[in-house]
Length: 428
Picture 1: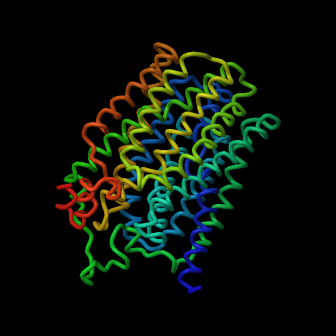
Picture 2: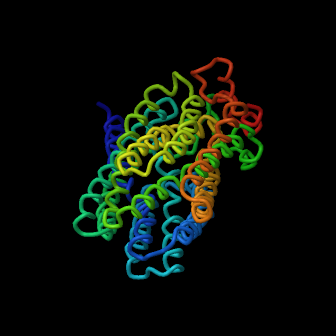
């Protein structure tokens, strides 16, 4: 076996471990923040929504620059390690400073630092696996990511029952240390940094000439890329607030079990996400990338309607399994579609950053939007409103977004074959 093959095998195993342990680090406290502020700090739902939106907007500002940085820098492993340390440190000081602005600022820093993870992990994966094996590698990434989330949620739920919701802070610290080791274990020589930004291997095109990245105007001139960004924003506008709202409903029924029940919801979803991510990795290139994205959008209106039928704890946790299906598909298909639309342009990661910015806008508005509706009209109205937003995204995707996978349909293969320049991709 060649040294190159050994290095790639080591890189793939290290990527598996990094995705597993970063699962609990990349989003900081995530939905646990809402439960902690509601039960321990006695905040109301509207205030929780506002502070989470403020923090999310800080991440939005950092997202596109983070993607652009990943396109150009070679120290991708070191940047991810530093980001993990920052997210963990600012989250651990939250119990010491639980006021409105300290929480907003600390979580804003965490979101800004966490902006580096999605483009960096996708870039390293593309640099290791290449375009041909990228869909499979992303499916594997998401499988280990969801398995890590499920494991962390299970541990958090079990220990929080005995030691209180503060246990999530200690769990975050442990996962951060493990993620640092995993990220730094990825062999540097296994990453093709030109391929990682969406160019050909080593930045040499099929004619043997040195490739140059396309103009940044690609972000504004590629119609399919813009349509995809709109659909992604609507997906997260509908999705982001659903889990925190469910957590709040459960916590109000039994404050002593709030964190444990939230962990049950997360665990249920994460377990369902693993086979969904594996399915995307195994079948998306055959069945079509757009079809999987449509399925992810369709899950949200159904989920929102089902939440309104009962306040029973088992029912709410059971419906949360649908989150695993929708989010599991979305997480695996998102970087694949971006790679389709930016292939051979050298702008893969900045495009990821730009679309994740749109995603962040949707997510940030979601919590405020839902929180205000809850205060004015109740939880059922909020769930139905969020589902309606997803329905709009489904319609746009169905009628306006073309299939991006070259293998699924001969008539659409030209999209990925003509992306060697900004004008080519815009024409697709």
